[in-house]
Image 1 (tube, one colour):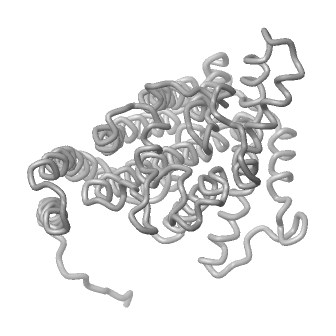
Image 2 (spheres, one colour):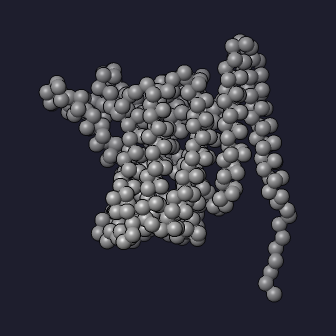
Length: 410
């Protein structure tokens, strides 16, 4: 967190909003001046390493209970009241289970793969603003840093599949890498529209650009045609990047046993499990930052609520949305997944860049006013909506989906 930011409070609301920054500052002041920046950095790292894994533990319970309710069953209900201590039992089980390494595996690479995955994902949190003045590394190219670090997760997944010397693991790794590379392109392009409109690669600057209000409503990018399209594309690509349903083909149990971590057990399997959920929360956090105003309030009269509370509230809503999709949508086929990436997601992402540019220049050309704003809205929304319908119908036409028929065994 940034010690040089203006953290001085002017009231109880400001104090509550900056409570973690104030605590960090007070603790750092207990050390000599030369050590204060290092102590502040360590405290920030400890906060990230403590908070997000704790949310992961809570998410595992909420997901299993939520999916159980959707599927008319109970879910975890044995360990602790209402099964709330199930994550603790799972952690103990993972720590005590035998760590089995296949005889023919490359032991060093097999060990490093889950470590590289978790470390890379934790590094992505370093530039994520979780509240006002609450970012570990406030760098100008924070978005670029996040996507660059995120690309290294593909290497760790390939390391896991290749080092296991297992055909199912290798096939799962190749599937995962192909899927992640394919959807990384629309993920990046969907984020570029927010960067274009802000004129900065800094996550803090992107949040600040969405900080105003028109009446009671905020200036979030998602409330524009290009912002809504970019947000929708970002969410779909994020689901594929994090192997969440309906894009969980790398872990297709009916086809690949368990995918790239088939030969992993014990704590190393738990690291892969942790990395998947931390990656989901990380990419959800950046979606919130790019399109949903980051830690900004959704209404002007609620701005007194601490900024970090708004960020984590939005994060839990995003997690609930991911859980809901997992309990709702069936898994795609591999050909459907790749066709969707290259024949629908990529064209829509490229078109959205042009629409964002048109939005900007139409605003300068038409000038201010309600009529000019309506024309700009209708023109951009018509282009995106028309292209969405045409691409969707073209893809359905190629699949030649006929009328559904039912047959019964005789």
